[in-house]
Image (cartoon, rainbow, N blue to C red):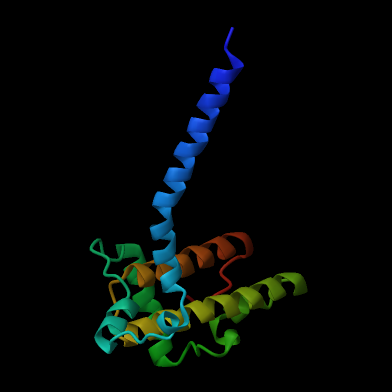
Length: 160
């Protein structure tokens, strides 16, 4: 049977070891607290570094052929004025839309607003020169598959 006095000593040794570990961790904690000090929160980042931080990451794999074809078609419709990025009705295929129930039209309307919002973001990135980035590629893909999913349920609702 274990001796209770030996168990107490072992427990005290373990506690002592833990206290030493906590003391060793203290400088790391203090360093993390320095970041939260007022003067560090208001520190300025050099302009060049800020530009680099804000730049979307390049996607070495590029845009898929399907997404590339889709976005070229969409951007052409925007440039031709057939799609106005601030008017959801311009995204709707009226022949199909008019045949939907009121509930289905509401669904189409809400999704048109969402799709146009994402298309505005895509166009802004294109205009800023970020044509091959993860961010842009993900947004293009999201718009295409969302549109396809909605249309698989309700028909060819959108002109894109």
